[in-house]
Image (tube, rainbow, N blue to C red):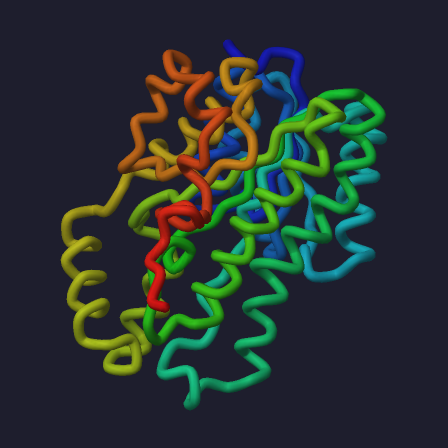
Length: 283
C-alpha cells in the first residue's frame, strides 16, 4: 500500500472517474474524504466503498460555492487533522453546440465548475499543505486541453485553463514541497457522454459517431486514470510537478526511470513545440 497513513480529498467522487479514484486511493491505504452535490449518490458510494480502506468521509458540497468549499476542507481537517492529497475531479461538459449558439449562462456555469471550482478548492487546501511542508494535488483535465474541441467550447477552454493553472500553481508551490499535476483520463464511459447523445446533431456528426462507437466498446476503464492519480499522489512521483499527463497514451508507469529528463524538460506541458530561437522568421 503506497499511500498508507495519507489523507486524501476527492471532489466529484460519487460516480464515474471520481468514484474509481476514491476506490483506488482506499485500496492504496489512504484515508479518503470525498464530496458530491447529490446526497443520494454520495450515500450510495459511501456504503459501497466503506469497507475498503481505513476510513471514508462523504461530504455534500458544490465546489462553485465558497462556503461549501470552506466547510468541505474544514470538516476534512477536523476529522483527519490534515490533507496530504487533493484530487480535483468535479466537472461538467456544459452547453454543446457552435459557440455563437449556446446559452451564455450555461457556458459561464461550466467554466465556473471546471476552472473556478478547481481554483477554490486549491485555494482552501493549499495553506493546509504548506503548513505540513508537503502535498500532492492532481487536477482532472481532458478533452480540449491539448487540441481544439469544436462544439464543446466551455469544456475545452476551462480544461485547457486547468492545465495552465496547474503549471503555474506548481511553480508557486515548489519551495513548499507540494507537487501539482493534471491528467487527461481518456474516453471513460461516464454520464457526461449521455449529454452528447442527448445533444444529437448539436454535438457534430464526427464526435457523435465517435461517442457511440466508444460507448459500444466500453470506453477506457476508469481504473486506468485512477491508477495514474494514485501514482502521482505517491512518493514515486515526488519529483514530478507541473505536468499534464495522459493516462492512456503516456508511459507513466515507467516515469520513475526518467525522472531527471521529465523534471528538467518541457515535456508534458503546454509549451511551444519550437523554441523561440528556432522559430520561423518571416521577415
